[in-house]
Length: 201
Image (tube, rainbow, N blue to C red; front, side):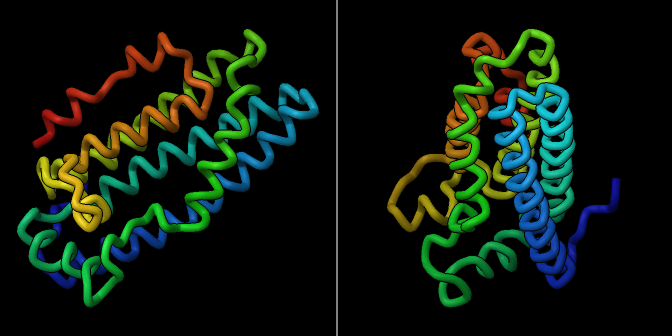
């Protein structure tokens, strides 16, 4: 574990480079899910397993990157980092969800849902590990929100005059994405971490 960043310039650099890393990881995930889609259509189950394994590792990489990117004090976030994402530095309501790559990934997952819900029994365990990593990624994102913004809304929601706490918005996105990724209802209802995330504050 690295020492928490306290200098504004260093925190801003970490935030910006961390998001550059996210762009690379998301692009990798788009490519892996295209490979997964092709393997599912061809019912090439070894290739499906390999793609799920690669995606799982990328989701865990995203989770780790969230913790690294946001590892600085709340004071620095409020005084330096958050203002860098608000007018006049960025358009009102700025959000990483505007990324074309992020949207491509979400769309790709939605198309895979029927196939992922009906995987052969010998791939169920691999799929659960994939879902575990996906959940951890969203929980790490929520942790950053709790740590820096508490129960305040995201920049995107604030611009839309919504008061939903940012961690709750992330949890909603997590639930939606898990469904798109073929998460069984029983697994979704018992997924770990929502309370754990809140306890990080």
